[in-house]
Image (cartoon, rainbow, N blue to C red; front, side, top):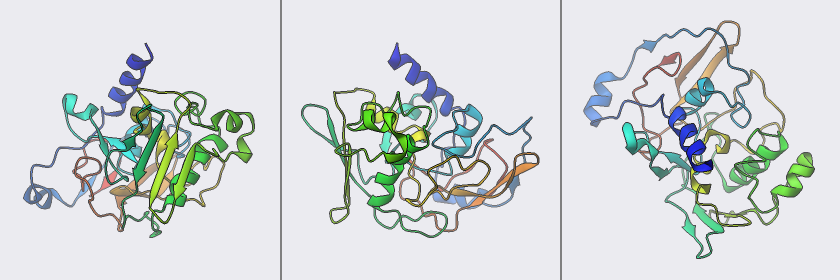
Length: 253
C-alpha cells in the first residue's frame, strides 16, 4: 500500500514536466519568449521543505534539486531515479542501510553561492527543524530522526546524515532497509537549500535554488515571475535539463 501511495505521489509530481529536448539545436531554436499562465489562487508557502501541494510541487521542479531526481521524461521513463546533485547513484551497503553520495563540483545556487556538503547536511536537518509534513513519514527512518521529531529545533541527525567536506561525500544511514528510500530522496521535500536558509517557514520569500529557473518576483495576491537562473549550467539533461517549459508557471525563457 505504501509503495502505491508513493508511486501516486510521484505520478502527480510528474504531471508537470519538461518537454524532452531532442537536441541542442532544438533548445536553441525554442529559447526565448515569455509564457503567461493563470491560476485561481496561490498555493501557500514557497518553502519547498513545507509545501505539500501539487501546484507548487510542479513549480519546484525547475527551481530546486535533490541528491537524486525523477528523470525528466515522458511516460514510464519519468519514474526512473537518476543522479542529480550527486555525481552518480549512491553506493549502498550490503545491509541496505547506508547510502553514500558524491556531491558534484561546480554547482551554484541562484544567488551565486557554491553548493557544498555543508548545505546538504543542513538541508536534511532543516526538514525536521521546520516540522516538514514528511519529516515523520518519508524521512523518519534516518538515524537520529526520532530525536529530531521530539525536539525539532536542536535537530542534528547525528549519525544519520554525515558529511565529509574533504572527500565531498554525504553518507545517509537509516535504521532499517527501506526499498523506497531513494524514491523519497527524489521528492521535493528533500531538495538542497543554502545552509543559512532560515529554519522557519519562509512564506512568500523565495529561497535560492540550483535549478534552471529562479523566482524573480512573487506576490501571492498578484502572481509569480520565474526567469532563467543566471548561475545554472546543465550538469544532467536527465535530472535538470536546460529546459523547454510546459505549463508549470509564469516563466520567462
